[in-house]
Image (cartoon, rainbow, N blue to C red; front, side, top):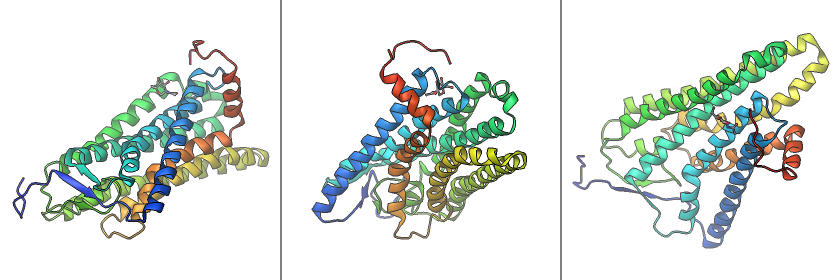
Length: 311
Ligand SMILES: *[C@@H]1O[C@H](CO)[C@@H](O)[C@H](O)[C@H]1NC(C)=O
């Protein structure tokens, strides 16, 4: 690495929040509670889906894996962020920073694909109910999960190969964790092409997936609406949970990556919302609105969890 002032950047300084200590303690407690609830909620969903005898449909298989992605995504940044709230020197090593970016985009990209698969699942379930179980075979479901991992991996590697050897001229990050737009800003060399690439890879990708998902959900609703009006309200009640999750997931990421390089002050809060709150909202939305899920959780409490179930 060749740096202007001769020193090589080996760690970054995260500015985090500059708040009075009462507020910092409040943030520490709040973040810890939210993260605890996220772990609890998502693990509860994974356990329920795995061990319950009533939740053997493809939708719950995908939902279980979505919870897994959510839990991982939140764990990439949140524990470090919580530790940093009370720390005086908030630093992260160069490789820690790269690891955060790598895993965030691995799990984020994978989750994006899984949300598309979940939309496809709803499409088949609602528009082709008679063929549902034959189309959504266990084989296809496993492929959905594997492909999500692969796409997440390709997505994150495409960034990593570009940024991993860049020379940094500054090491102060005005945020609570590392992310692409923040790190690219610190690069010494001309970054115009790199910025364009990040916008194309992360921003446009999430924008397109989001528009694609909204169109799919609209198609489902229109198809159902043509058939019967009773079906429409039923479909709307299942799909509203999906549409909410999709909006919460893609909204912030479009905001962060589609216009990443003209920073605005809300960015820090948006990234916290994205990594702290969204992974908690998914389990809340899916369980509070889903009586079958709640029923299965209730039954599980009275059953021997070690009973083996085949999917
Ligand atoms: C997630 O996917 C894997 C691999 O396809 C599967 O074995 C597992 O049961 C799924 N997890 C849940 C909680 O459904």
